Image (tube, rainbow, N blue to C red; front, side):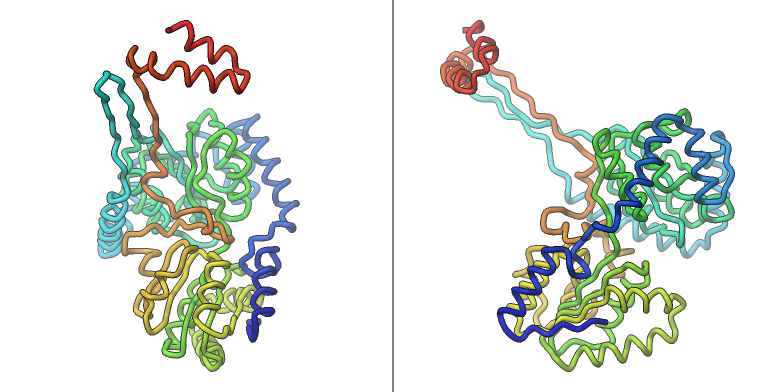
Length: 435
């Protein structure tokens, strides 16, 4: 891993500028994505024009699975049979995780409101669920029942009536039984064994078989992410998900084994995953590196982890806690693990992070799977302006107004003045004719 030592203000400011310019590991630079964007655009356009035929062709090309459109949907009987193959104890763990996720997201819901004034004017805000959503569950290199729960449970909590799940047919030409079991437990209404950019386009535009949806959520590979960007003009998306990220902010009291564990856990997602250590203790990095080497000897994904750490692993040795907090806020990472003597005191100063794990006994895996908060989080410094997926992402707001005649008489002159100042004469006239 590359180590950067901050010894003075110039060092710190130079590092921050490098991050802001996209020259550091978690800066989210996209200069190299031209080829992928062109490929995603071609797939999206082909599906928009040719529908099911294009989805079938791309599924065979990219997933090496030949499917007729009639085979896209996973029938309820197949879901039931697949669920029966899953160990009952594992299903129980899914169900308990689901209850935690449901309870957490239920607290997020806002309420509609209405106010009537003395003159009879009514103003309000009505909050309603989206009628239908599409959720993407990755499945090319691994299977993610946790992503099923994190996508679907908030939608159910929000009151969405139709939840369409898509996932690549990467397990014997279909979807892994555990993922199908999770879909059943979570409440998916329909499941399709299609993935990649082609499934995103199908959800956005609709095909003969796959219904169009007003919103698509869920992380995927770079082609899925770019396809979501391309269709965002016709349907909403949750966010553009980039590589997994963690920053461990640690002082001298941190346990090197626990610090290393968080970095290894993020690095095992993909070779482009980002794992960073920000520390006040000059002795800690060497200890962490030693633990990493020890752990790599026993981890099945050691080759991929090593590639990620060598390419995107960073160690920042800073002067004090002020430097550490400032750097963490600039990095605005997906996951922030605070392993200091007083993690809550540090957390009070954190403004930019997707999810924060406080203390050495709170591994990121707690929120990835079980505790309740959503693990679909902003990446690539988007935590500066974006939020985790929530139940509110599956609802929309309608403002409404009923003006009384008295209220219109009272406000008419001001409205006419403002409309006239903007040279929108018809707006002013629309008020005048009611006076």
